[in-house]
Amino acid sequence: MSITSIHQELGKFIIYFQTMDSAVNEIIYHISGNKLFVAEAFITKTAFTSKMKIADVIFSHFVDITANADEDAKDEFHLIMNRCESLGAERNIIVHSVYYPLTKVDGSKRLIQKNPRPKFKGGSHISDNDHELTIEDFEQINEKIKEVLGEIDRFRLKLINWKYPI
Image (cartoon, rainbow, N blue to C red; front, top):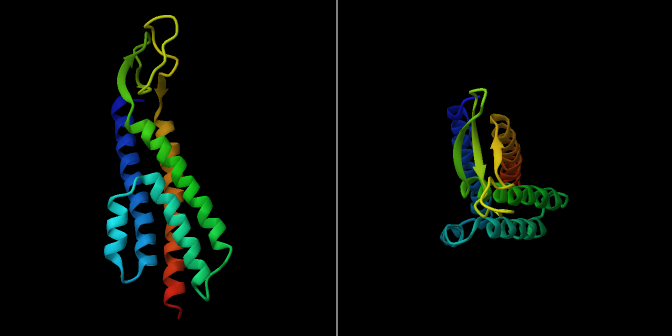
């Protein structure tokens, strides 16, 4: 494993996360209909976690007032918004951490993630919060985000179908 490949996966993570955030924005845009200025103001001034909670409420209300909507979709969408919130918490740790390279005795290179609020015990030694990152760590979280993106897109298509049934 090279540090460069972990950096590349970190970059993918940031892009996937922003794409997921934008996908939730699209859901909000579809629900807001011809009042995009309201959705735009809301989206630009709301923190990620709050936006997920509010999108969940808006979606649920939309299902309630839409004649041909699937009532079970509310529970499914709620689970997806919870997954988004969890990914947001992971994103905060990843983005707000400090990273430094480590060369092991065998010459292998590693990337160490230092928790932004380390708690030292017994002096200023390496914190228990330090975490050795592998490329697999980022591949796993990137897969989670891609799965959620697919689910969000499924709901975007449902919204379109509910608003404009054939």
